[in-house]
Length: 116
Figure (spheres, rainbow, N blue to C red):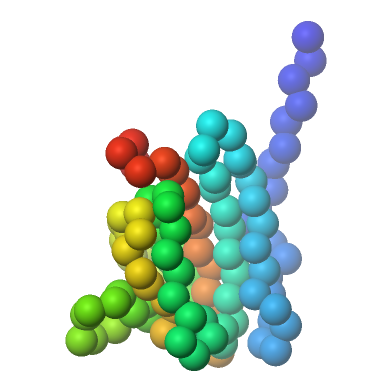
């Protein structure tokens, strides 16, 4: 039986300033999703908070960004290589992403109670 192989490069097809943030889902199975998100000058809309029933582990592969977490006084600044584990229902938002270069994120979403 021949297996299908899909490959690519995480840094191909980057979003540009002014365009919508680009989200590509690479894996979605058993409650686990792996996505690449490409941002350039994007941020969450004012007053919007993510509140997912799944936990999320996210790494910033390139660019720069800041996340805000409900109840925290200061944004969590991120640079390439930084990662963060966000528990299920931890309200957060993207405060800003660099408008000088694409911010490429790799996000792994998984059911609450599992470990990354």
